[in-house]
Image 1: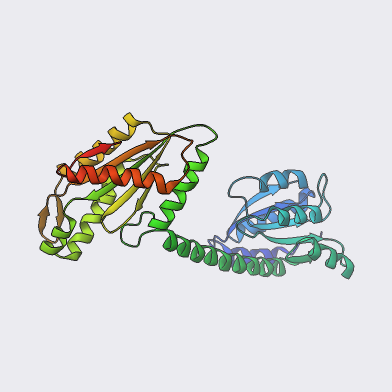
Image 2: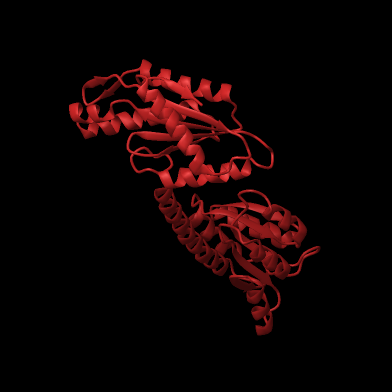
Length: 321
């Protein structure tokens, strides 16, 4: 590869300095070429990871948060550039890596082979620094569009599975995850705990203070619940003022303790909303199911019956059945 004149590199350095564009993997076995590429890219604002053969590049690409912008030399020891392209495309990662394949071969059939192997762009050696930079910018634009699409998709997915007011799982989502958890518990033979929680006299709160205050109450109760459950427990809004909490690998003692911690926490701290101080209590129905019970409908009926007992007995209490 010929070295680009220093004047061209100097102008690119001053123009690109401070422009952090992302991380690039350079897979190149020629030490001089590799060093020149690394110097250019760092001066243009990229973070750079280098590999001197295809096997090392492949190992890097197996890691979490692997680079998405790749410069792969065609001819390398261990694994060549086209084989790397094929392996990357077969991975079917969540994000799509952009691949620039570089080689000394400029025959059209080689270009076709490289693109068919999975490369997005192709550059022949010796290449000009300005052309390389322009082609990398194309990759950056495409990756930016991809990230926007992924972000939008995740936002839509979150909206579809979470309650708009409280931010916890929606009824449909928590019921679906409950069923999955029951099925998952069969193999390790672990019990599953269920809590049905209802905010006491919630209609009276709405009638007395208004629905905006009622919304604040629901959000504050949700926040309190989230602080007291484990990171892998499931919390969902089952109905208007009713919550469903799923506790994997939970026996009766644990579920009773968790339910009581939630009940006491809610009842001990008045909620401040729109200038009003509101005392709130909750009633909780709880049950623990053995792994041989895999029907969510049956379990929910049991927990709901326990909740009814708690409310019928005067509210602000936990009933475990």
